[in-house]
View 1 (cartoon, rainbow, N blue to C red):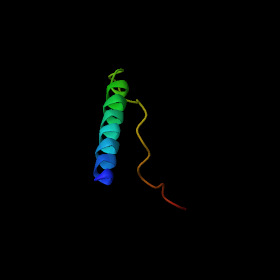
View 2: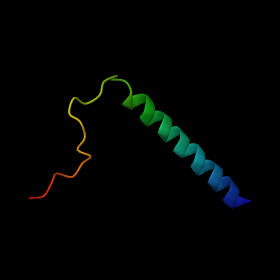
View 3: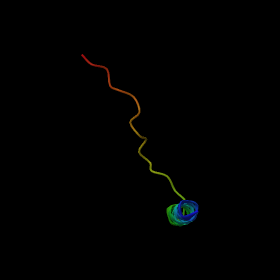
View 4: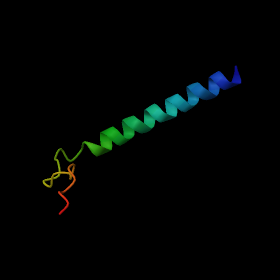
Length: 44
C-alpha cells in the first residue's frame, strides 16, 4: 500500500513538473530560425 501511495505521489509531481515546463516554455510563442541538423553530411 505504501508503494502505491509513493507511485501516486511521484506521478503527481511529474505531472506538475511537465505542466510547469509547458507553461514556461510556450510563453515566447516563437521557434528558432535555424533548422536542426538532422542529416549527416556526405563524406568525401
